Image 1: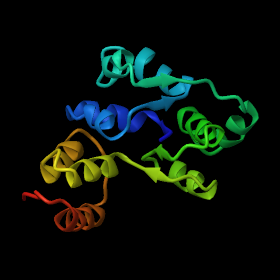
Image 2: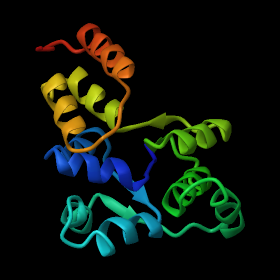
Image 3: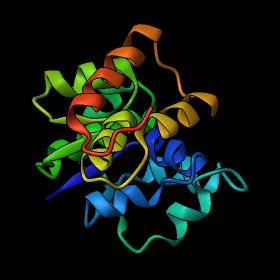
Length: 166
């Protein structure tokens, strides 16, 4: 399975000490140079920096179509633009994105999207974690989610997670 990620999920999961969930779900994650730059070089001393830098299962891959990246950068950040273009170039099975505009662009381009909450939900379905606790920790760490989405997601988790706990 080919998976490409933007920086947000890498950082968010590191903030709540759940970075390894990515490794549990995917054997390898590919990131473009701008995502590596944002998380590892510019993020020195911050959450996610050491995890990404030291993970043998995260592979850095350059984006070939710079023109497509430049076009997407008119509406998205560089990391999101590069991740989307790289996902297309790699014919990725999944792109991991949280930003609403980036998700809309990825969907328009026919990519299958998963975000941080989706990672938590998939892990919960496999009995790997306490969903509500980790979703709450994610929100406390600064992750943005509308209240209506929060309650909708909890209802999904209650139905789909075998060991769901309030």
